[in-house]
Length: 277
Image 1 (spheres, rainbow, N blue to C red):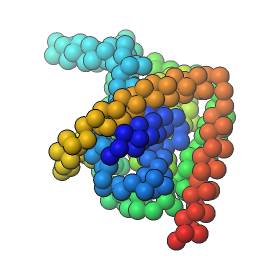
Image 2: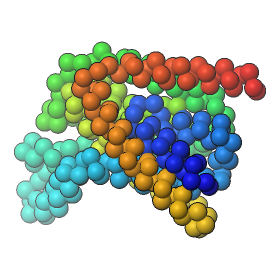
Image 3: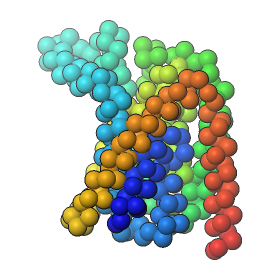
Protein backbone atom coordinates (compact mmCIF):
# COMPACT_ATOMS: atom_id res chain seq x y z
CA UNK A 1 0.00 0.00 0.00
CA UNK A 2 1.63 3.23 -1.17
CA UNK A 3 0.90 6.68 0.25
CA UNK A 4 -0.68 7.71 -3.06
CA UNK A 5 -3.07 4.76 -2.96
CA UNK A 6 -3.88 5.44 0.69
CA UNK A 7 -4.62 9.12 0.10
CA UNK A 8 -6.67 8.44 -3.03
CA UNK A 9 -8.76 5.66 -1.47
CA UNK A 10 -9.22 7.70 1.72
CA UNK A 11 -10.46 10.65 -0.33
CA UNK A 12 -12.86 8.43 -2.28
CA UNK A 13 -14.20 6.82 0.91
CA UNK A 14 -14.65 10.07 2.78
CA UNK A 15 -16.41 11.95 0.00
CA UNK A 16 -18.63 9.17 -1.30
CA UNK A 17 -19.70 7.80 2.09
CA UNK A 18 -21.81 10.88 2.75
CA UNK A 19 -22.56 12.19 -0.73
CA UNK A 20 -25.36 10.13 -2.35
CA UNK A 21 -23.13 8.39 -4.90
CA UNK A 22 -22.16 5.06 -3.18
CA UNK A 23 -18.83 4.71 -1.37
CA UNK A 24 -18.66 0.94 -1.89
CA UNK A 25 -19.23 1.38 -5.61
CA UNK A 26 -16.60 4.10 -5.99
CA UNK A 27 -14.02 2.17 -3.97
CA UNK A 28 -14.61 -0.83 -6.23
CA UNK A 29 -14.20 1.36 -9.31
CA UNK A 30 -11.02 2.95 -7.95
CA UNK A 31 -9.48 -0.41 -7.08
CA UNK A 32 -10.33 -1.81 -10.50
CA UNK A 33 -8.86 1.00 -12.59
CA UNK A 34 -5.82 1.45 -10.35
CA UNK A 35 -5.14 -2.27 -10.60
CA UNK A 36 -5.34 -2.74 -6.83
CA UNK A 37 -6.30 -6.21 -5.64
CA UNK A 38 -9.32 -6.09 -3.34
CA UNK A 39 -7.73 -8.71 -1.07
CA UNK A 40 -4.55 -6.66 -0.71
CA UNK A 41 -6.43 -3.62 0.67
CA UNK A 42 -9.30 -5.41 2.43
CA UNK A 43 -8.23 -4.51 5.97
CA UNK A 44 -7.27 -1.00 4.86
CA UNK A 45 -10.71 -0.31 3.37
CA UNK A 46 -12.27 -1.64 6.58
CA UNK A 47 -10.17 0.75 8.65
CA UNK A 48 -11.22 3.66 6.43
CA UNK A 49 -14.63 3.32 8.09
CA UNK A 50 -12.95 4.59 11.25
CA UNK A 51 -12.19 7.81 9.40
CA UNK A 52 -15.80 8.23 8.29
CA UNK A 53 -17.00 7.62 11.85
CA UNK A 54 -14.73 10.43 13.01
CA UNK A 55 -16.43 12.68 10.45
CA UNK A 56 -19.86 11.97 11.95
CA UNK A 57 -18.59 12.44 15.50
CA UNK A 58 -17.12 15.82 14.51
CA UNK A 59 -20.26 17.10 12.78
CA UNK A 60 -22.83 15.64 15.19
CA UNK A 61 -20.91 15.60 18.45
CA UNK A 62 -23.58 17.46 20.45
CA UNK A 63 -26.34 15.14 19.21
CA UNK A 64 -24.34 12.00 19.94
CA UNK A 65 -23.40 13.16 23.45
CA UNK A 66 -27.04 14.06 24.11
CA UNK A 67 -28.12 10.59 22.94
CA UNK A 68 -25.59 8.88 25.22
CA UNK A 69 -26.67 10.96 28.23
CA UNK A 70 -30.31 10.26 27.46
CA UNK A 71 -29.59 6.53 27.43
CA UNK A 72 -28.59 6.59 31.07
CA UNK A 73 -31.56 8.80 31.99
CA UNK A 74 -33.84 6.35 30.16
CA UNK A 75 -32.45 3.42 32.12
CA UNK A 76 -33.04 5.33 35.36
CA UNK A 77 -36.64 6.12 34.33
CA UNK A 78 -37.33 2.49 33.47
CA UNK A 79 -35.86 1.27 36.75
CA UNK A 80 -37.93 3.75 38.76
CA UNK A 81 -41.11 2.92 36.85
CA UNK A 82 -41.48 6.23 35.02
CA UNK A 83 -41.54 4.55 31.60
CA UNK A 84 -40.11 5.67 28.28
CA UNK A 85 -41.96 9.03 28.11
CA UNK A 86 -41.09 9.41 24.42
CA UNK A 87 -43.62 12.20 23.88
CA UNK A 88 -41.95 14.27 26.60
CA UNK A 89 -38.32 13.71 25.57
CA UNK A 90 -37.60 14.18 21.82
CA UNK A 91 -33.91 13.21 22.11
CA UNK A 92 -34.99 9.90 23.72
CA UNK A 93 -37.45 9.29 20.91
CA UNK A 94 -34.65 9.99 18.41
CA UNK A 95 -32.51 7.31 20.04
CA UNK A 96 -35.36 4.80 19.94
CA UNK A 97 -36.01 5.56 16.26
CA UNK A 98 -32.32 5.03 15.46
CA UNK A 99 -32.49 1.61 17.14
CA UNK A 100 -35.68 0.66 15.29
CA UNK A 101 -34.19 1.78 11.95
CA UNK A 102 -31.06 -0.30 12.56
CA UNK A 103 -33.03 -3.54 12.98
CA UNK A 104 -34.17 -4.04 9.34
CA UNK A 105 -30.71 -2.97 8.17
CA UNK A 106 -29.09 -5.68 10.29
CA UNK A 107 -31.63 -8.32 9.21
CA UNK A 108 -31.11 -7.59 5.52
CA UNK A 109 -27.33 -7.47 5.89
CA UNK A 110 -27.10 -10.80 7.71
CA UNK A 111 -29.70 -12.60 5.60
CA UNK A 112 -28.32 -11.61 2.21
CA UNK A 113 -24.62 -11.19 3.01
CA UNK A 114 -23.46 -13.88 0.56
CA UNK A 115 -25.61 -12.46 -2.23
CA UNK A 116 -24.29 -8.94 -1.67
CA UNK A 117 -20.69 -10.19 -1.66
CA UNK A 118 -21.24 -11.84 -5.05
CA UNK A 119 -22.14 -8.43 -6.48
CA UNK A 120 -18.54 -7.29 -5.92
CA UNK A 121 -17.08 -9.78 -8.39
CA UNK A 122 -17.68 -7.54 -11.44
CA UNK A 123 -18.48 -3.88 -12.06
CA UNK A 124 -21.84 -4.63 -13.71
CA UNK A 125 -23.91 -4.76 -10.47
CA UNK A 126 -22.28 -1.50 -9.39
CA UNK A 127 -23.34 0.15 -12.65
CA UNK A 128 -26.92 -1.07 -12.22
CA UNK A 129 -26.89 0.07 -8.59
CA UNK A 130 -25.79 3.57 -9.59
CA UNK A 131 -28.66 3.81 -12.07
CA UNK A 132 -31.06 2.80 -9.28
CA UNK A 133 -29.52 5.40 -6.95
CA UNK A 134 -30.10 8.09 -9.58
CA UNK A 135 -33.77 7.13 -9.86
CA UNK A 136 -34.20 7.26 -6.07
CA UNK A 137 -32.64 10.72 -5.85
CA UNK A 138 -34.82 11.98 -8.71
CA UNK A 139 -37.95 10.77 -6.94
CA UNK A 140 -36.85 12.18 -3.57
CA UNK A 141 -36.40 15.69 -4.96
CA UNK A 142 -40.16 16.03 -5.41
CA UNK A 143 -40.67 15.69 -1.64
CA UNK A 144 -39.77 19.25 -0.68
CA UNK A 145 -42.68 20.22 1.58
CA UNK A 146 -42.63 17.46 4.19
CA UNK A 147 -43.24 18.63 7.76
CA UNK A 148 -42.72 15.53 9.91
CA UNK A 149 -40.10 16.02 12.62
CA UNK A 150 -38.98 13.85 15.52
CA UNK A 151 -42.15 14.56 17.54
CA UNK A 152 -44.41 13.29 14.75
CA UNK A 153 -42.12 10.46 13.61
CA UNK A 154 -43.41 6.90 14.06
CA UNK A 155 -41.86 3.46 14.01
CA UNK A 156 -43.09 3.05 10.42
CA UNK A 157 -40.84 5.91 9.28
CA UNK A 158 -37.88 4.26 10.98
CA UNK A 159 -38.59 0.86 9.43
CA UNK A 160 -38.82 2.34 5.93
CA UNK A 161 -35.54 4.22 6.36
CA UNK A 162 -33.80 1.20 7.89
CA UNK A 163 -34.99 -1.01 5.04
CA UNK A 164 -33.63 1.46 2.49
CA UNK A 165 -30.32 1.47 4.34
CA UNK A 166 -30.23 -2.34 4.20
CA UNK A 167 -30.77 -2.32 0.44
CA UNK A 168 -27.83 0.08 0.13
CA UNK A 169 -25.42 -2.71 1.11
CA UNK A 170 -25.43 -3.51 -2.61
CA UNK A 171 -22.50 -1.82 -4.41
CA UNK A 172 -23.60 1.22 -6.37
CA UNK A 173 -26.60 1.95 -4.17
CA UNK A 174 -25.76 4.89 -1.95
CA UNK A 175 -26.33 4.42 1.78
CA UNK A 176 -26.67 8.13 2.52
CA UNK A 177 -28.80 8.60 -0.58
CA UNK A 178 -31.08 5.65 0.19
CA UNK A 179 -31.65 6.62 3.82
CA UNK A 180 -32.31 10.22 2.83
CA UNK A 181 -34.76 9.04 0.18
CA UNK A 182 -36.42 6.73 2.71
CA UNK A 183 -36.88 9.65 5.06
CA UNK A 184 -38.25 11.97 2.41
CA UNK A 185 -40.70 9.54 0.79
CA UNK A 186 -42.01 8.59 4.23
CA UNK A 187 -42.69 12.25 4.99
CA UNK A 188 -39.77 13.55 7.08
CA UNK A 189 -38.88 17.22 6.87
CA UNK A 190 -35.77 17.66 4.69
CA UNK A 191 -33.34 18.98 7.32
CA UNK A 192 -34.39 16.32 9.82
CA UNK A 193 -34.24 13.62 7.12
CA UNK A 194 -30.58 14.32 6.37
CA UNK A 195 -29.71 14.53 10.07
CA UNK A 196 -31.40 11.20 10.77
CA UNK A 197 -29.70 9.63 7.73
CA UNK A 198 -26.28 10.55 9.09
CA UNK A 199 -27.02 9.57 12.69
CA UNK A 200 -28.27 6.08 11.80
CA UNK A 201 -25.07 5.56 9.81
CA UNK A 202 -23.18 5.25 13.12
CA UNK A 203 -24.59 1.82 14.12
CA UNK A 204 -24.56 0.79 10.45
CA UNK A 205 -20.88 1.63 9.94
CA UNK A 206 -19.93 0.12 13.30
CA UNK A 207 -21.79 -3.06 12.43
CA UNK A 208 -20.18 -3.39 9.02
CA UNK A 209 -16.79 -2.63 10.56
CA UNK A 210 -17.21 -5.51 13.02
CA UNK A 211 -18.56 -7.94 10.43
CA UNK A 212 -15.94 -7.17 7.80
CA UNK A 213 -13.10 -7.30 10.31
CA UNK A 214 -14.26 -10.67 11.67
CA UNK A 215 -11.61 -13.18 10.75
CA UNK A 216 -9.47 -10.56 9.03
CA UNK A 217 -5.74 -10.47 9.49
CA UNK A 218 -5.34 -7.11 11.18
CA UNK A 219 -1.62 -7.77 11.46
CA UNK A 220 -1.42 -7.30 7.70
CA UNK A 221 -1.47 -3.52 8.13
CA UNK A 222 1.37 -3.31 10.64
CA UNK A 223 3.95 -3.08 7.86
CA UNK A 224 2.16 -0.10 6.29
CA UNK A 225 0.91 1.73 9.35
CA UNK A 226 1.92 5.11 7.89
CA UNK A 227 -0.31 4.89 4.80
CA UNK A 228 -3.14 3.48 6.93
CA UNK A 229 -3.05 6.47 9.30
CA UNK A 230 -2.81 8.94 6.41
CA UNK A 231 -5.70 7.25 4.61
CA UNK A 232 -7.92 7.39 7.71
CA UNK A 233 -7.10 11.07 8.27
CA UNK A 234 -7.92 11.90 4.65
CA UNK A 235 -11.18 9.91 4.92
CA UNK A 236 -12.13 11.83 8.08
CA UNK A 237 -11.37 15.28 6.64
CA UNK A 238 -13.04 14.63 3.31
CA UNK A 239 -15.98 13.07 5.16
CA UNK A 240 -16.51 16.28 7.13
CA UNK A 241 -16.50 18.23 3.87
CA UNK A 242 -18.98 15.78 2.33
CA UNK A 243 -21.38 15.98 5.29
CA UNK A 244 -21.40 19.79 5.25
CA UNK A 245 -21.82 19.79 1.47
CA UNK A 246 -24.72 17.35 1.67
CA UNK A 247 -26.49 19.44 4.32
CA UNK A 248 -26.17 22.53 2.12
CA UNK A 249 -27.37 20.72 -1.01
CA UNK A 250 -30.43 19.30 0.75
CA UNK A 251 -31.35 22.73 2.12
CA UNK A 252 -30.71 24.89 -0.93
CA UNK A 253 -30.18 22.86 -4.08
CA UNK A 254 -31.48 19.86 -6.02
CA UNK A 255 -30.56 16.23 -5.43
CA UNK A 256 -31.05 15.66 -9.14
CA UNK A 257 -27.55 16.98 -9.85
CA UNK A 258 -26.30 13.78 -8.23
CA UNK A 259 -28.74 11.77 -10.35
CA UNK A 260 -27.05 12.92 -13.55
CA UNK A 261 -23.64 12.03 -12.14
CA UNK A 262 -24.48 8.50 -10.98
CA UNK A 263 -26.40 7.81 -14.20
CA UNK A 264 -23.37 8.80 -16.27
CA UNK A 265 -21.00 6.65 -14.21
CA UNK A 266 -23.47 3.76 -14.13
CA UNK A 267 -23.97 3.75 -17.90
CA UNK A 268 -20.21 3.90 -18.43
CA UNK A 269 -19.63 0.93 -16.12
CA UNK A 270 -22.31 -1.18 -17.79
CA UNK A 271 -20.94 -0.49 -21.28
CA UNK A 272 -17.35 -1.00 -20.11
CA UNK A 273 -18.21 -4.33 -18.47
CA UNK A 274 -20.12 -5.64 -21.49
CA UNK A 275 -17.42 -4.58 -23.96
CA UNK A 276 -14.49 -5.99 -21.95
CA UNK A 277 -16.29 -9.15 -20.85
